[in-house]
Image (tube, rainbow, N blue to C red; front, side, top):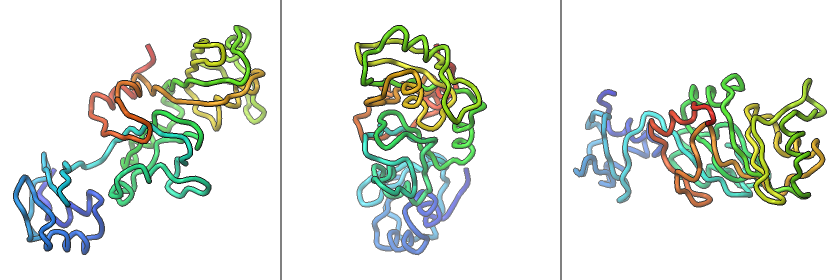
Length: 240
């Protein structure tokens, strides 16, 4: 961390162009560590910096790492085509910061979605080489049978894949509900695997990535939170 002028700090945090940030400061809309600042050239150490804009307090973050409890009907894209984008569920400054989803959930799939403006983090989390397990709960059209579970565990052949794809873990939860863990993250993978095994997915929810569980974040659908270092470490943990 280092000292930066206040207008640069606000711009880096996604509050608009340098010109707009300077106007906010000059108009007296910004306080830093409890003190109103009207000189945009004033410099501050970004380490532990807290500032308030329009009576809302923020902490300086070099990068942001977010978890969203994605509701149905939203696209995981910065440029959605048929449904609202998940970025509309976040404060506007995250769009300015170029926050983007880490991987994708279908528009009708709900649950745990990671988002960040850290390109290296996004790449690492999205890489198939990392084999991070992801847990899904699927509601099915037909009853969940032992045969279905065994097919998913032993592997099913999808028409555009060179080899069968198998679940790392799978178990029946209810008559028409199962829990499945995948590592690959292929396009529509859970839905396609269920179809290939002779059933169909009616609803799908991602509840866990690595050892980070959605329930531990206490988020209602559409709500988001920052992830701290301890929670980020759970993303790299193998399933246990």
